[in-house]
Amino acid sequence: MIGVMDSGDRDALAASPFLNALPEAARQALAEAAVPRSMERRGHLFHQGDDAAHLYLVVAGRVKLTQVGSDGQEVIVRFVGPGEILGALALVPGTAYPVSGEVVEDGRLLAWPRAVLSRLADQHPRFAVGATAVIGERMQELQHRFRELATQRVAQRLARALLRLARQTGRRTEEGVELDLPLSRRDLAEMTGTTLFTVSRLLSAWETAGIVVAGRERVVVRRPHLLVAIAEDLQEEKSGEGAEDGDGAEDGGLRQRKEPPPA
Image 1 (tube, rainbow, N blue to C red):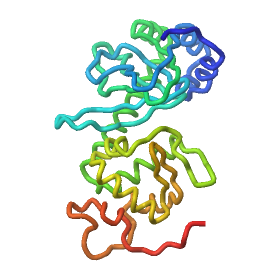
Image 2: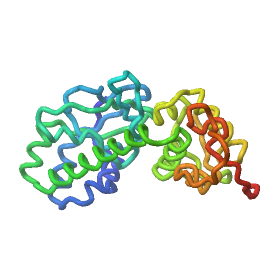
Image 3: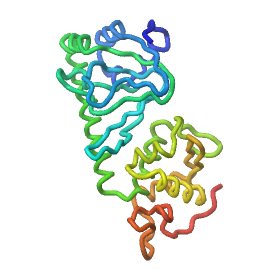
Image 4: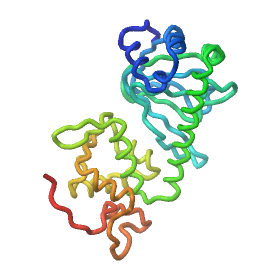
């Protein structure tokens, strides 16, 4: 649903790191051209392969970016939250979205159609430069994620995914660092290129070890230093692999090292 700019939209524009780096004239032009929209959970902003027609700034809520590979497997690339932009490829004529954007939390965003972006890029070259930098960063991130899928054990990939989400969305609670978004075990399986069963085994092992608390669409990281050790494969070696395929799922990627009980 299309709406009218309000104070929350203007605050989001002012707080966005990408837009903050632009000159005042460019920020003002973007604010005047922005189209506010509401977004509802399970709706899609765009699908993989669609014409890249809009740039978006998330004001509230979250969007899940997914990509389907040549093998038909869907992988979650990242979650985009308040203050972040997506769809920067709309600045490049003739391009398509390489991912799908699904709303996972009700919220609000600002949109700019390609025609408006082209005009702003001509009038404010630093806007085009900044958007190009964002495109480069996202492509590097995508390459890094697929390199993880090809070279790392499942336990490492899951630990890295949780640490990444803790940095992006984490908020401190009495239990630890809670990932502030609805996150199912199926989501984690799609983020790490593995099965729901393997993710469940890993989370159960980590919960027993006091590393995480895993509930329905809820994860709390209690001992991030142990997740770092798993992600970096710093555990002490033990005889034999944890699982038949070497993913470390049987022992949760933990290699028989004793840790003090959590405080």
